[in-house]
Length: 217
Image (tube, rainbow, N blue to C red):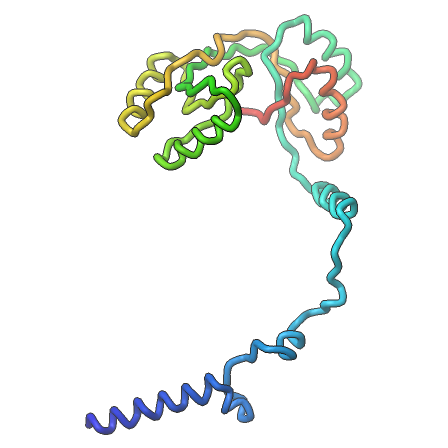
């Protein structure tokens, strides 16, 4: 029985060697050759491939963005002095394309790291935080730049609790600061900025005094 098993094993090895070396190709058995000209024969319409100049590539890429889904954008809160000129500018727009409504936003407290001397220092800190598995986010208060937020909270107490947890994970130089005080005012919202509305929103940015439009929360 053992002798038969050895004979079958040798036979199987011989068949595999013949298959791998392509000795059985004339009978239709064997691996697909990876050398030329077989690889060329596998190409599908290689004559249609061409290298695009940078300008043409950018134009095609821009055209590809034409199918972007509609997005909700908003800005605020801001005071009534800024609201009146916006109302006049937006008056000719479709009534459903925008809304201006009063809002009250609570203050926001963050676990903060900074200020750093430069953006390179910020990038180094990001790398250190990734190594210990600590998430971070961009700041919304330019006065705290360059720096990082490790999380935002509606109360100082909640931020202090997160800081205590982060200390146990190796975070040593963070502290709790108020990113923004409680705010009341008006918020401008564009519920569905599609390809028809997007150019008009871009033109409106100049009337917003440099204040950014952000995705709706």
